[in-house]
Length: 436
Image 1 (spheres, rainbow, N blue to C red):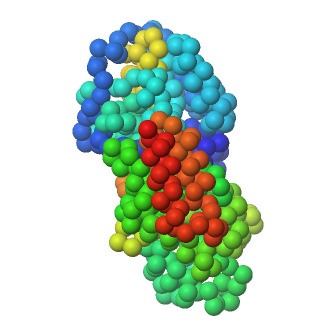
Image 2 (image 1 turned 90 degrees about the horizontal axis):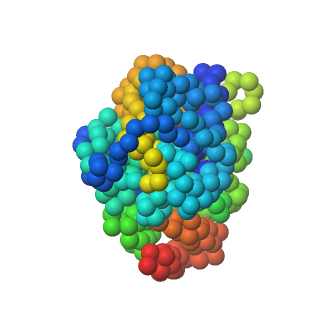
Image 3 (image 1 turned 45 degrees about the horizontal axis):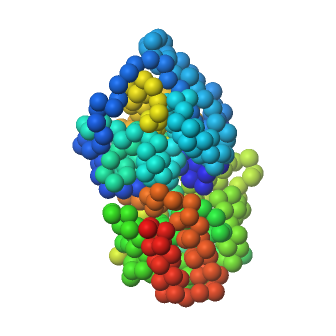
C-alpha cells in the first residue's frame, strides 16, 4: 500500500477500509472554478466498451458503481480490471501495458506521483481544453496537472492532519497550536505534569522510506518554501527549505521528537499516539477511528482532537496530498467513452456513494458540507481546511530517483550526521542532476 493510500475515513461508523484507491501529486493551473487547459478534444473520439484498471477493491462497492454506469450505457460498458494491492505492482502492470501500446487498459487509476511520469512518456492523454473542474477541490485538480495540462480526472484525495491530546492542552489552558513553535511551547507547559509522564512531544513518519519524503516536503511547504518550483525546477537550497528541515532537526536535538521516530512509519507513529506515548501526531486520517476506539485498544479515546498541520515561522501549515486520479490511456480505443466515464466517477452522486461506502476522501467540494458525510465522519470539515491549503510531492518524470535522493539526503541530517546547510546544498545539486 502506498504511503498516502490510507483510507481518509477508514473504519468509522462500522464501515470497512477501502483497499487501494488513493495517493499524491502537483503543478500549477487547472484550478477549480475554471476549465483546464489541455489537449485537443479531437483526440477523444470513439464510443464503445472500455476497461478500467485500478487497485483491488475490497468493499464490493466499486463494481456496484460500474453496474450503474453499465445499466445506463449498455453500448459503452465498463469492465473492471483489478490490479494487485501493492501500488508498486499496479504501476508496473500499467507500464508493461503502456510499453507494448496495448489497448487493454482504457482508464487507469493513477497515484498522483505517477502523473508526471505517465504524461512525460505520453502514456496518458492530456484532457481536452475546456474540461470542467469547477466542482472539484482545486488541490486535487492541481495533483492531476503537469506543465499546465490536465492529465486525468481526480477521483479521491487525502491529506495528513495534526492529532493532539486535547485533554492535556485543556488542562494546561493552552490553545491548539498553529505553528511548530507553539507546539513545542505547549509541550513545555505540559511535560512536567503527572499526565505527561513517559511521553514525548511529537511523532511523524521519519523512517527512511516514502513517508520521509512526505514529511520533509510538508515541512518545507509549511515554512513557505517548495521542493520544486512551478517550472518543476528543484529549490531546496533556500532559506525556507532550510527552516523546514531545521525544525525537524531541532526537534530531535531538543528531545521533542524521540529517536524512535527514525524508525517510524504510519503504523508505528499511530500506535505511539494511540498508546499515549506522544502528545502530537501528524498522520493520515485513517488514525481517527483507531484512536477513537472504545474497545480498550486505545488509551486516548475521547481525549484527542484534530487540526490542520502546523506552520513553520510565518508559513502556513501545509499537508501533502494523497488521492487517485483517473487517466485515459493514449493507446485506448473508445476514448470518448473513457473520458465520459472518468468524469462520471467525479460526479457528486457517485462521489457520495463511494465516500460513504469506502472511507475514501471525496474530490467533490460539495460533499465537505454534506450532512450525511459529516455525520459519518466528524472531522470532514477540518480535513477540507487542510486540503484547501494542500501541497504536493515533486511532479518529476523520474520521481523514483527524486524521492530516493531526498530520503538519502534528509535521513542523515535527522540522525545528526550532517548539517542542514550541507544536506540541502548537496540535495540541490543531486536534484538538479536528476532534472537534466
